[in-house]
Length: 256
Ligand SMILES: Nc1nc2c(ncn2[C@@H]2O[C@H](COP(=O)(O)OP(=O)(O)OP(=O)(O)O)[C@@H](O)[C@H]2O)c(=O)[nH]1
Ligand SMILES: [Mg+2]
Image (cartoon, rainbow, N blue to C red; front, side, top):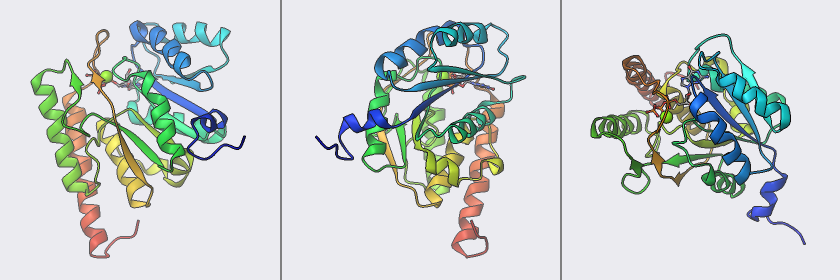
């Protein structure tokens, strides 16, 4: 039997890497890894840890010793989400992975959604974004203040950058590796939420096909948030810079 491009079985032949950045996720990482591997036994997982003081690395190390699908990248100190992902993307490119999934460690992202992301890529998307705002709002247990910040920030990012995506800041998404290869990762400016926006803008401006896959996002139950005012300010600044770039492009004053 031949397999068509949209045949879910053909996903099995794709080399998939799930990248999970961690900082102090000892309470979550031991639960999330087996759940991902349960749903997607053929994937590999790369945990990029920034020398978490709570012993996250020890847990990952002990899993990786008995399961070759699990890999640990150790970084010297807290360098931010963006640089952690860029290190993971380089690993994916160097090791010939074809699909690269971004996912948080805190169980806000349901591993059961990963096959839908892979299917979206197999069905010709280049970037599949797990969207909390595709149909109204699908976020559980967030305080109203946090929801308004995220929802408002997404409208701001969408309007200013002109990228037609409802959830620009989602950290649950899947790339074809060609997208990552085509973006000059060294020139990515942002490190917090803006990192997600910047990757989307770069992919969109290069003409890659972006689709949103509706997801339900659940607030973390354990561990602490790394969200800060600094991350929010960085987001506003980077979005405005990208908006200026858009205007310059429109008037032909800058090449991308
Ligand atoms: N390697 C690395 N991972 C990080 C860093 N900051 C955050 N992370 C991880 O990135 C993922 C997302 O961070 P969260 O703190 O959950 O941020 P968030 O999801 O935006 O916010 P909350 O869920 O509300 O806490 C988690 O897996 C974190 O452990 C960092 O500086 N380095
Ligand atoms: Mg989180």
